[in-house]
Image (cartoon, rainbow, N blue to C red; front, side, top):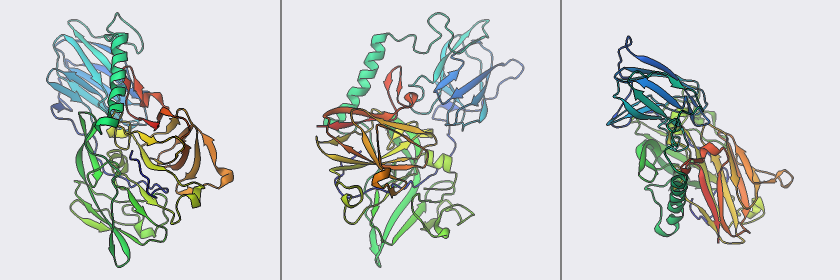
Length: 441
């Protein structure tokens, strides 16, 4: 999150989308063929509590294994078995979806299974596959059999504490050493002025995106960034967007918070045709939205008041920033990054901080600020009247919702700011995902 002092921000409008079902990563195999007559079959469930049930499976050696996988959550999850030199995994499963994963016979030994969505395994979404001669039972979820039943059983308390501290140190070190990952979204996009109209060029394409240090994911992006570029306009502006689709699938653009002509609403075959691969359109994707938005196709359009934010909210912010909440195939993230790669919000004591928040994920995220309260002053692009504003330190943000928050930074220190669904932010090895901090000097 950048320290932005310019007047930009408030009707945060999610530009949506473009993403395919998760493809198998390099060196992985999906849909292996197994000998049904000799296979052992196991039922596996995935949940939004970031658990895989059962937590441990005993399986026979040198026997083909079949896993019947059900995603009982609403968010996207996957199931993968890691073997030496090979990962067998399902595609990314939407809520309620099922899949069958076939794994060839494995030699006796201990193997791990996990969800491959970034951050989920770190939060505990994994288990142990114990392969032995003559085995073939499933350990009930939560039960223990010796020290091998829990995926974290091999870690000491000190190792868990050290892993947690390592993440915090990496986050804080960015203050002196700069960002610990490559690529950042929300880079300001300047328009061309053509005949009095502000024109913005947007390209949608696939990118490799560094979500946490050293971890790259397949993403879809506007202008090679997640979230997309920061677009700021003034009330009354005439605006034109030129969209070029470099994806391998159709795409359409939809804006939240603006009242537009019906023909520009961006719903394929309802108000307009989709933009096909290699084609352009002058006008949020609204095509294959669950995949495309989850893969990174969203960004802010800020309609800034001509007379500054004081004319709307009663104060001129010293710090202004946007925070986009994401989940899905990029994992739990803030502005396209997972902790410790998230960026802190930095303010001086006494500053007013204006935060534009938007949820472009598929899940509810209650965002909680430590140390100070914030005032909710705007919702879905509309300023709230003085009588309807309210103080809080936790705000539940539904998918598609946008809020403006004002924080009076009166309390010095480093204050955590995170989603309060705790398995979106912390696991046995420490913090991950939707965590940042407000640092008041």
